[in-house]
Image (cartoon, rainbow, N blue to C red; front, side, top):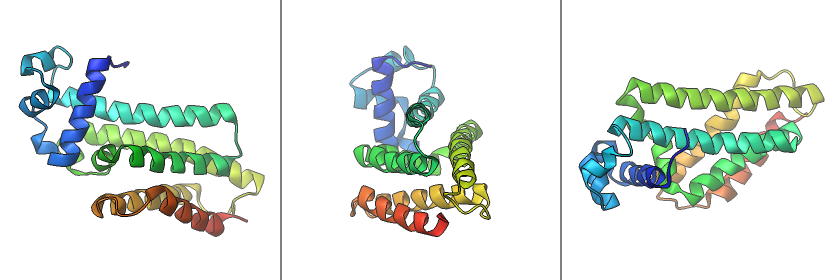
Amino acid sequence: MELTKRQMDIVNAAILIIARMGYKELTTKNLAKQMGLTEAALYRHFDSKNDIVIAVLNYFEMLSMAVIDELNANQCPPLECIKHFVMNRYQLFMDNPDLAKVMFSEEIFKNDPAFAQQMLSIMHLHRDHIMLYVNSAQQRGDVSSDIDPLNLFRIMIGSMRLIISQWNLTGHAFDLRIEGEKLWITIEKMIKR
């Protein structure tokens, strides 16, 4: 679903509120105040608070798909594609730390099974694309073929999630992109033939 500029403004305001105040503070009252609107005006753009949260998740999925589509169009070597995806995530979250807090918070997902299901769907989207690249890298002989592709995905993306969580918890005390690059180099050393 294509969002209007005003809907995108509401999504960004929702991300800010969730990241800085917590999911429970994402109320139409607080959102309207953040936006300088009335609550009634919000309902012209979204039917409910849940619809706003779904739009936040759709926004994240859209950002992910844009990178995946770019990689597919460029036809880079598979291991390079994975690296580009991972490094793009680091840059995305450095550019938008509030989005990182929202996407890596479990608070939002435990409140509604639909939110958890949508986030799981996004994770599976990432998994499916990364595993295609892993399988291709294994077939090319770039990556050890005796390592299960699903576990390689978990190592690559799980370690990325951990370092982003550490970055969030330390108040962004280190350069996420530099530390992510170091982590990627370590992973490559472990998995390359």
